Amino acid sequence: MPPLSQSALEQAFNQLWEWCQAQAFAGHDPFDALNSRRFKALPLSDNRVARLVWTQFVKRSPVNFRNIANVPAEKNSKGIALFALASLARHRTSPSVSTEAQTRDLLDQLIEMQLAGWSGPAWGYNFAWQSRFFFAPRGTPTVVPTAFAARALIEAHETFGDQKYLEAARTVCDFFLHDLRRPVDSESELCFSYAPQTDTRIYNASMLAAETLAAVGSKTAEPELSHASTRAAAYVVRQQRADGAWTYGADENQQWVDNFHTAFLLSSLVRIIRYAGDETGLNLHPSLSRGYEYWRTRFFLADGWPKYYDDALYPADAHAAGAAIVTLCDMRNSADAAALAKKIAGWSFDHLRDREGFFYYQKRRFQTVRTPFMRWSQAWMTYALARLIEEKI
Image (cartoon, rainbow, N blue to C red; front, side):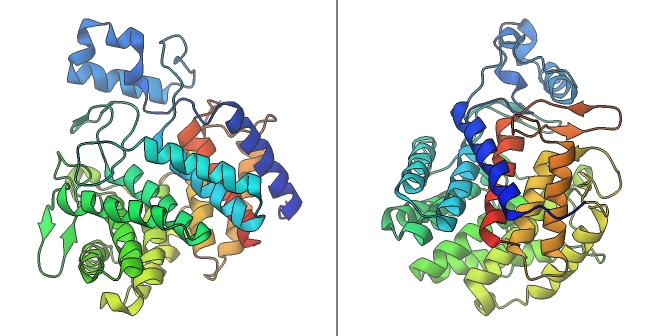
């Protein structure tokens, strides 16, 4: 398969952007089953096991039951952050009055979606989520959407030179520093919890908080932010396995290794190095190199097929593809990064892209799940294509 041309990427981006815009950037999500009005009316809706079974059934089903179950299509704060990041990349590539207006509108939407009642702005998901370990009600603030919102605000400040975006990103740091628990907190290491009500140690989540602190600290010259970022980076780097991989988290039931959470870790490391440099007091480059080598060689086939887990071929997932392309753009000077990014995009075009321009959820062993999830698939692929076009790799 020949590499995708710049014009093919631009055409695909424009078609996808127009499709998402026509939906007002709102849609369904793999984890939104508990938004079902029919399920909420059942007596079992408050039962932990029932919530877990319903969530997993709807998520795993190759048939989309959401319309039948009355699950509304909604905007998701992380999705809006990703669309804002895509729009920023598009504007940097081809600046215009219209691209600036579109980007600022998405940023305004993102700011309006912040959750009140915390030390600083925070964002959560637009659905309740029941896992095997805890229940997060709708609107629970968590690190991941908050950190991606902060990334969008920081890039908006860098792109437009508008101080209000940096000020907003600075206040996000207060949420991380004052509202999250610290299951690890020593002079040299720090781990931020995934959400205020849990002590769970999720490596990519803590590193995303560190990325925000490093970026803001470099711009506001606040050593306490940079120091907290350094300690958080030190903790995660020291959890890296000898082969270069990171498991999802610290607990025994979190020992899997997957594609996009590894990609998040690598992108955050790149950004911490960029913003903090040698001021961290740590040499992060060896960890980044070992992590990248493991990820590059274990998660992708020769044709660009993006594996979800390091030890299984299926499923191939649009989220994994999009996050991988973004990370490869971040690491564009690393071995094979540019070529692999193009291969993943080409494979996704051939196997996950609909003729209308949107991307399917997953390619599984016996079927392709064609549900067009807005945050999970469209937002990530929009961000990925915008970055590929911007980097011209």
